[in-house]
Image: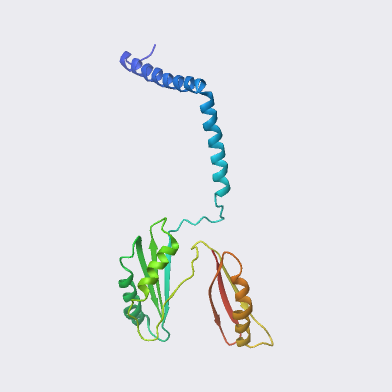
Length: 210
């Protein structure tokens, strides 16, 4: 014999009957409109197949928002000078860009790096164009020219390599890097140069995979 009150039992039975009634109506309506149900089923199958073919598949999905990175080199100056004369004016001028959410910066010895983050869905080229337009109005020390980092994904892979030779000088290796290897890498889709440097005995380079 059930210990539940009769009112509670009646309420549960009423809910079950209502749910069963809705399911019966859905099934009966589907049976009456067979061609309409079949049409929507075929449409759903074709839509799913089309979406699946266009779905980008990445080993590491890019979930980061659109970003613009501005790099400025000022060799021979302390981080405090770089912060006061380059980073702060750059941040001040970049404030108020449409769809920008966050602005971050770092000042090192001879180097200023300002990063702008935008709302998800913002076109990358729109964001870069807005930053480029304001970049010309930044008041910087004489001889300092900022540059915009290439368009790349933060989740991309970095490939580093070193050119060494027992019978070639560092200048020859740097020439080989600039005029032969770099041109070949630029022709590969999805690869962008990040920078290269030269020491007295070897030439270093760094590339990013988008």
